[in-house]
Length: 60
Length: 241
Image (cartoon, rainbow over all chains, first blue to last red; front, top):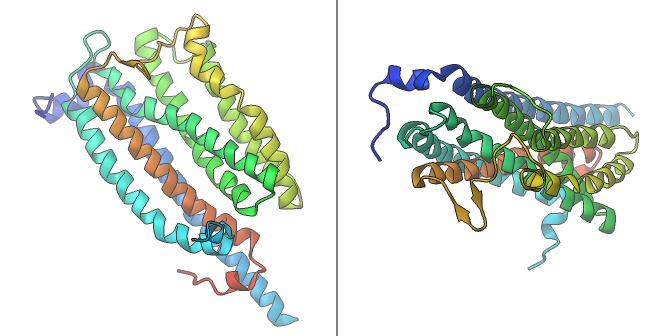
């Protein structure tokens, strides 16, 4: 279970493939963050729609 | 035990809310361990160099993109045969996460392909059929939301999803059936050609992706249930927490 890299600089450089490796991992992180934000927005909207329904009924 | 108890959207709403955080926690723990193995411990590939490390997210997301489609299609089958409400809601909840994993699999494949094949994209059988999978997810979501009556959208989209299932074996076997630029499977039911740390890292990351997908689906299905049941009395009493 020893680490493969000798330093952090070594790790970030990814043997010269830093751009391709981090563009891949970065995209996954962005995708997950966006999905979690969208999940929160959708929940807020659904709750707001229920609130609207409730108000409509109170008016009638 | 009443097996139909949780097939009612109102009871499943509560269950999903209680379970989802645990799946997210499990996903985070597994991902931390998998990344430690994959990015930290695993040796660099002799032929490809460090860029092969994209495998630890490329293969899990690609597997999940197909697996989620299969599960979604199963729920669609239930919807068409038994006309069950929750199954249609589950299928709707899976689709965006499935599309997300498909997109990430294509994206990471492109950034792996550039230094190893010399190109981001090629119209080979594996890549093209995976792109078709992305369009199937998009088509499913568009069709499901194209009707005034959501139950009609459920059924129309379910039919599309079931027809699209033929694409799954095409993706899976494409590297055998055609002469593709994409490499063959490193892992199959017969065994593996991979280094043990690489394989472990990849499997741990796959479980992480699986747990995340369940968590995200459960969170989304809660919103889908609320959207559909907003006129029901129980939904009125949901705490806006």
